[in-house]
Image (cartoon, rainbow, N blue to C red):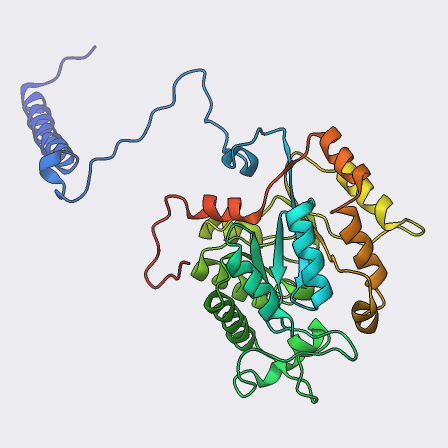
Length: 356
């Protein structure tokens, strides 16, 4: 190793000492900034958790687990749609809730028989009632209009003064702002009538098949702090809404894992359709919905699907085979109230947020 000349040695030594002084000052600054003295007294110290050798992060609990079930359990919400549409629907729904397998139901606030079911809901606060937010009126001779003033939602009203019969007409003639105005009017009317709203869904999917209207759906869930009906991720992705569940997760809005959605196979009876879908239930939380209604002249004058609705009432209220099938499969039943309670648990209300 060559020897350094004295002058060269002194120069190197001075440079080394200067570098050490700068390094020491920098170290002191870092220590000060990360010490309690260097931090604001209003901000707690944070220290990143160090992974333990040989371990992996704990998996996020499933919705079933958060509700108190096992990860392998098949948990089912049996929801009754179109409540309030007719007296026959109200009577069948009450029967299915009190004596059958139905665990929750959703009310159509603009419909003529809303006062009857609202009175029942107020008198039976333990029953699970959500709102079937209604922006369409699809029957030819049995129609209803908006809850909001027609002058406030002109695009939702057809030339005869009723809501449009299909969702494409809603998208073509209305705006998301008008749809939100009408939906909020329906929610407020139900709350004022004494309905303890447990969840929201959308009649004919008007707030679900167009992302602009889905954002209305999302805002209302946040504002009133209630769960939502959502299509399965595969269905949403196929319709261009694959991002929507993640948005609800960010909002801490709860929704079931799966939704039974689809028609019967050719030649398949109503009973066989439901038996097939019940056997195919996956682990997790699934919502299915039925349109229970009593058979009779009232429903026959409204819709040609009256017989199917009467059959669904029978199957989920009085049919021993359907009940036995659920028991044999070990299916657990739950209502939307449990999801709402979980959603609201330990949540701090946001500024301006409305809670019931």
